[in-house]
Length: 280
Image (cartoon, rainbow, N blue to C red; front, side, top):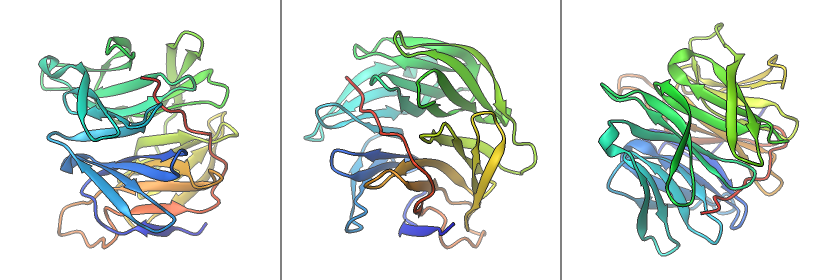
């Protein structure tokens, strides 16, 4: 498959590529630089919002603006750029990490464990109340759902596996966590992921320099290599949701990877699901 570079080497640690179908742009974040970006594939422009703390995920909101998973919790960014806190867990000693929005607009957020505080995965409602579903995690990533909304995928990266949970779309409850795939044949570890319209699970392998697709049964179906080691996440976008966007991070300066930190795209990689905006 042909790998292209719509945005070349600008990020320290890019994450969470999310298509916004309203204005047909790609949202992504540079976590370590506390930035949320909006890339327009039509003309290559990339606009940025800067914040006072790291931001790990940015998702569209119904009515405009963004919802952000930040170091200290979740915040809402209004269309005028003003920021309003929604949930705060800074006192717990954890930090916010990856996020996903289910088919009915519910926000799920995972956290990174602190020195004396275990991480967790939970749903944050529109009032800012957190409903925790998975506890004792270390580094939450890769939150996505099957096309019918009955399966929820989740990565706790240090476990080196992708897990699956049963999901009740009517209530937003997740249960029955169990292993889905354990990619032991690579130096990379699972990071961000997305699901296509056929139920295939695409996952970026951090330190593996690749994105893999697994069938709904967990069989390795495809692997796409990239010219950088730190592939961080992936998501479908484009006019017909067939382009796979992939974010990357930079390694230490002594590593010669000129394209590290770029946003990549694989045109025609598959058929993505229509993204859902946060209902808050």
